[in-house]
Length: 350
Figure 1 (cartoon, rainbow, N blue to C red):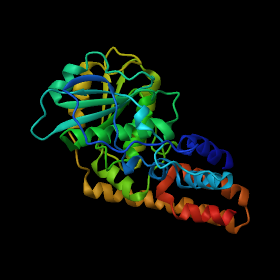
Figure 2 (cartoon, rainbow, N blue to C red):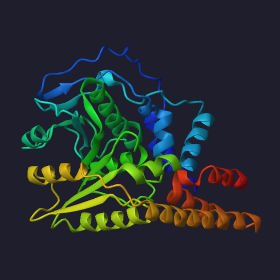
Figure 3 (tube, helix red, strand yellow):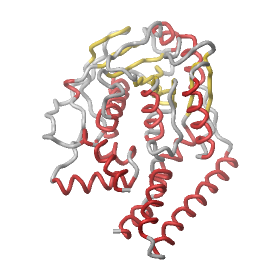
Figure 4 (cartoon, helix red, strand yellow):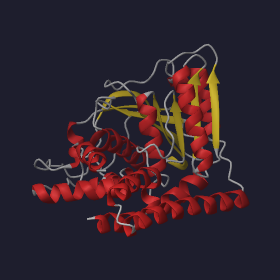
């Protein structure tokens, strides 16, 4: 368990003040011209990207607790925001005409460091009225918690401040390693993102990461988030990942899911034709059946209660080593759903 929590502490190192950066005061929002811009600088910070909120939503409760205690021992503190927007650049594509209900928005997380609009995506975005935004230096080798995920949150916030965006059509997507990040953000921020486009990359919801967020966020994800998988026909590894992820969605009471296998494709970014289909699918939200959702949630509660009871029984029996192991499994699998009971059990083991 200590190894798991130490890893979480290292993952959050980008959130630690070294000292904290000096942020410029937010400017009055201005709208860049329609079309493609390659060196966009944003200036506004969101409470959703604050370091404490990122930890609460994206780390499991015991991992977040370990990070906080590590900071206390080293006399360090979290930055308010881990990103200094004055030094960041984004690529932004804005269609010439906004739909009557407002633009849709796709925040895209790539596996590479260079910010770019994928080839031939522009006409698809234009036809669908979708704004595209992606951050530079947000590739697979970049710190997820301290950088990749906050950059995506800040991109969404700043675009929505500047353009008439329909809040029911705000999506996060990614390719390959970026798709894993997109899934985690959709799960942790269902109050911002209404859909996730997972292109050749996905995880089970209890893979640790991702871990389920606090109950109110998980319930919202179950009720209002659309998940669309798009993977190439010959990308066998990612197709297997998608199957495991889809099965996990079902067991975690997430039923608004669609999958699209791109014929003839391998491990490659979604084609313009497949992107058009995916954007249509993201907009085709299907509300879950209330009876099915209630029954599924009850079964989930029973599984959690059994796991909590098992850890407590091990503590009562004096088998503290096994209790720690089982508590780590519980924390990875149930995440925020198990708090505050999991935190209380960790305290008892100390």
